[in-house]
Length: 72
Image (cartoon, rainbow, N blue to C red; front, side):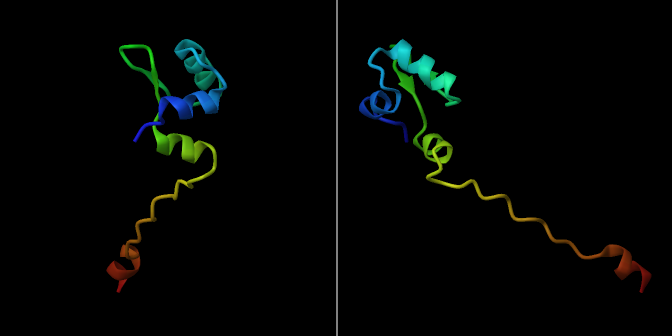
């Protein structure tokens, strides 16, 4: 569900947790620090942000043309 510490270090190029959090936030990633200071980043967030996954828009709701039905 979350990136591993190694993946975060590779993504940010930083070792210290505070530097990783600063880099992630500066580059528009959503990050939540754990109680021990380690950053937590959702894997799907990174995949979407980096273009690996595409957010598909919700399917439009199709309803009948009530005016046409009521006019008949």
